Image (cartoon, rainbow, N blue to C red; front, side, top):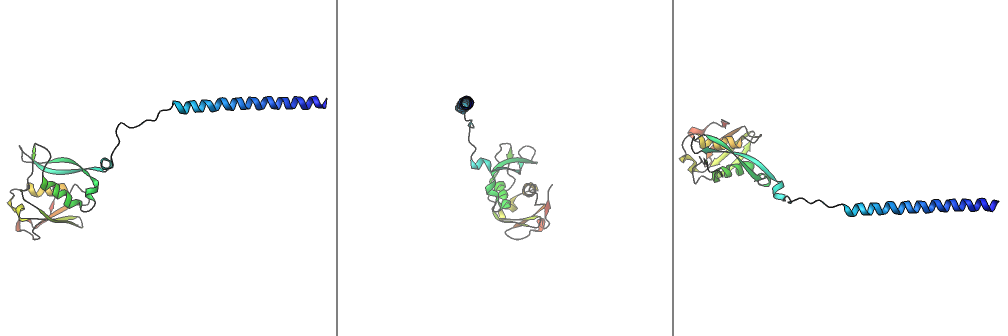
Length: 174
């Protein structure tokens, strides 16, 4: 009798083990099938490091018809703004617009000698060619573009390092 009980116990444990092994094998093959059926999704186009660094700047140029200053949004590599963003922006203005309906109010041949921020005022030192300009648009092209930056509230314009009689005060956004 004792042998029969031991035999039944061994038989029941054996059947349970066989069932457990079969269930495990069935489950593991389902997992493998699911993994094989998954497809990797790849983006249509990789984004370059340069594209990730793009930022938008607002520059001001003259409208060819109305001669009023209007905004031009320009995408630039943010890396270019690390050293001296003020100098970079003034150079973009001097190089001119990218839009056909706009024109550059800053006289040709104008060069940037130096641009630095003192407090919340940007000091822009330009070459003498800037004096060949007429009206206030050349000044406010620079002033409005630089004051788009939150740290700049006014702009002082110097010509070859010197104050000019008609530009003694710092200009604020118009």
